[in-house]
Image (cartoon, rainbow over all chains, first blue to last red; front, side):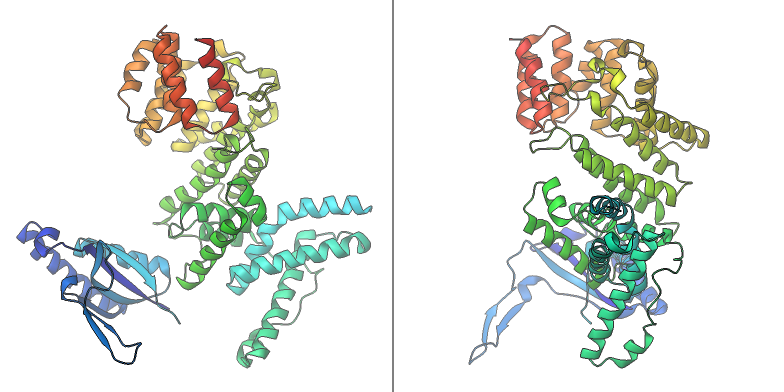
Length: 118
Length: 407
């Protein structure tokens, strides 16, 4: 078994209204994601999952020097930022991809699948 | 046997057996790196021993067992070093290289699907397939795709690392995944073929080695999946295209179009084999992209002369192909057949409506239609555009010849 990070990526400046222009669609997506989460728990794939506040709420901390330095985030200026993620346990990449496809459909976003070390 | 004789045997065995040895070891040890390295070492040993000891009766089996034993030695050394005793205990004793080896068909199929996994970049899929199944060396692959050797080595290493780290499974996909995954495998093999048939750049008009390797892989796949009509279709398509190779370039190395080719130069055996495969596909009656392209090529290779070509049949096949694969490229090729059936004017109307500005065959086709309609000034402009967009020397020579005849 391998653990995978399934991360959901959104446009940096996108508000929930941008991602789901239709409120009913947004509610449906939240509901679908809830159902998917429940299915992950039942099937034993679930490790952890969560949605994140917008990238503008992020803070970067550099503790590599003598004194920790704190700056306004996010860390990366990339146009796309993580909006949420799952950590799942799967037999192999094919199984993780199948889970990611279902998660992507539920949350209406593209998902990156990345293996954990060890 | 002479040294030269056994060297040739090793070379032949290498081409035929490398993929099998790698597949067998990958199946047993779960590491592509180890499988590749030990397969290579087994061949080095064959080169050293066969000239004096003679070629063993089952060279492929000999190589597999030697490679396997080398892998076991390597793992034992490593586990001693790392003091992983339980792993060492799991490893079985050396095998006798003379002992018969069980079938490796499934392992090769698994290896092919792993190399062509959609999580790998297309260029990495091609490179891995050629390296691990085809046994081409990194410099050979780098040379074929005109990238620096270092880049190609990195590409292959990175892909193998991803397979290991992301746990890309080493297996034939399950039934529900198979159609999509099969398309990926066929696309990789056909990409190798088209790169050989009409290299995008470089000094060679045709690269025989890549065509031959793609056909070899097509035969392997066909032997492994005899009931897949698209596999038969792809093999037929490659055979029927490659059969015309000797007639495709003139003495100056310029491309010769189908209508002007000397048909006595065509490879009759390849054509017969291709036609038999197309007939088999027709009997199965499960048409698909490659089968229809093969059928088009069967019509062409069936005609004694260009004038005898059954263009209405070609057009009907392209109609079917467009229903399966509705892309502008298929529409363009269909228009070529349409020009033969209803004339260049109606074909030009179709072509002009396509959005394929960056695709050189689009401009070459337009140029030819305009030329046939006597619109020479526009034809010259279209030839110029086509020439600017292709780096293939044979095609450039052909297009320049046509262009210059109009001015």
